[in-house]
Length: 144
Image 1 (cartoon, rainbow, N blue to C red):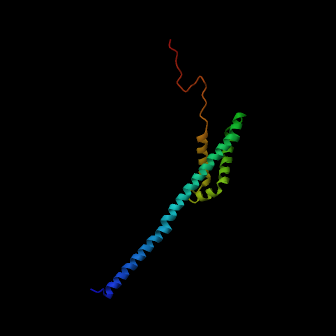
Image 2 (image 1 turned 120 degrees about the horizontal axis):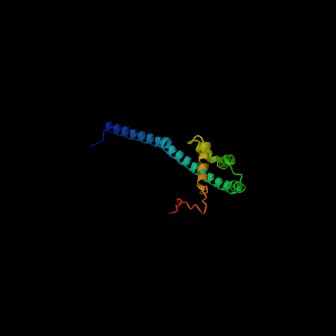
Image 3 (image 1 turned 90 degrees about the horizontal axis):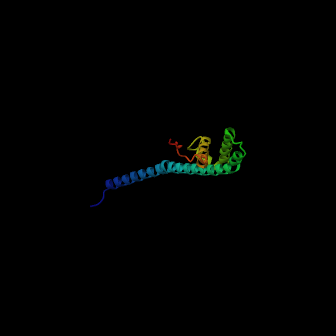
């Protein structure tokens, strides 16, 4: 049985349609799906990098500014706010490229970095000091 010209034409049309569908699928994947994945992965990496920089900056500021001010008895809310703003600016300066990448998905990188600095401060904040008489337990009452 020989294949007629009609069958050949149908086969060519099916192959052409399949090629067009395949090409459209590949185009969709390379222009829509893959860039979104790469973009979100890049943004996540940028935010992680900024978090690491914030952690390092807070450690450094604690060692150089905060501990000295506390030892001299001059650490107060105003100085704490100034140190925080200086830390945020240091993170933005050291991570300028990362901040630029993060801004494409996060938008307000300033707020993000402020939050990262606050998280790092909370991480390194010294636990409240207790006096020897107050060992964290409820006071005992004398029995009469």
